[in-house]
Length: 303
Ligand SMILES: Nc1ncnc2c1ncn2[C@@H]1O[C@H](COP(=O)(O)OP(=O)(O)OP(=O)(O)O)[C@@H](O)[C@H]1O
Image 1 (cartoon, rainbow, N blue to C red):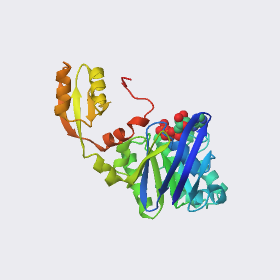
Image 2: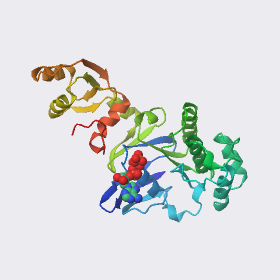
Image 3: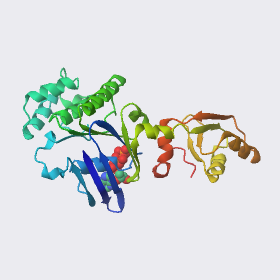
Image 4: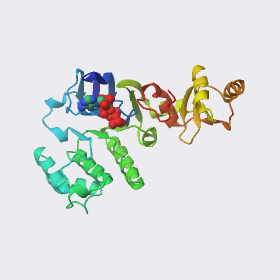
């Protein structure tokens, strides 16, 4: 169990995390979601005791991290997969961690096998691909067989087989009764992974609910619009309360207004529409709509 209580972290004038409170429970995979710069990594670093909060507190299994001398046996974390000594072999890297955490060296071979790096154990980490470094980071997190595990963007760089494997691993760890917190900035990475979602934006809590409840938001309709006057139409739709975003394929995805009203507005302002289609919004769109106000940089943002 991880309890984050009114946590705030400021860097000069930047507030990375603002009065954040949530609880991560054992026995399930909790997805920690937010757009780039939302404050996910900063929060994870504070949970691991690597950053001091400006105010508020974090406890893991009821204790602050620095009160737990057992380190990796207590909580395992993958933060930055690239942050390893490139000159060491995978086995040597894990052996150093095992020694400094009083973990039996036999565990090194076990986790190497578990993450599929047994064959590469003697190779220098500097020559590893990003996906292999992720596997090594996951091996390090598993090394102490901890009841609480954190993973920051663990799917980055993994191939489709790796993604499937890691999803299975997270589910198994949760089934074993562990607390598993996995961060991502992409909803679709969480769709088949998380049971619970904690969503943040600009350092603040936006949602904390089961994935199924979050998915219910996605059953609302959205409308795809294609027009050469996207900027003008976006202004009109937004003024009527719609949430409008580029759909990534040259069109607009509109939530909060139905197709009939969008058609009327376009007609009234002599805007040519090349497509006007109602669809069921995906989970990804529900996430984007929810975090729209907290995205720092939008591609194709007309503002
Ligand atoms: N050491 C630091 N010094 C100054 N500002 C920082 C520092 N670390 C993070 N920030 C700022 O705090 C905010 C939150 O950053 P953080 O890395 O926690 O976000 P994130 O949600 O993990 O983003 P991403 O998905 O891009 O990794 C950002 O505005 C970032 O620029």
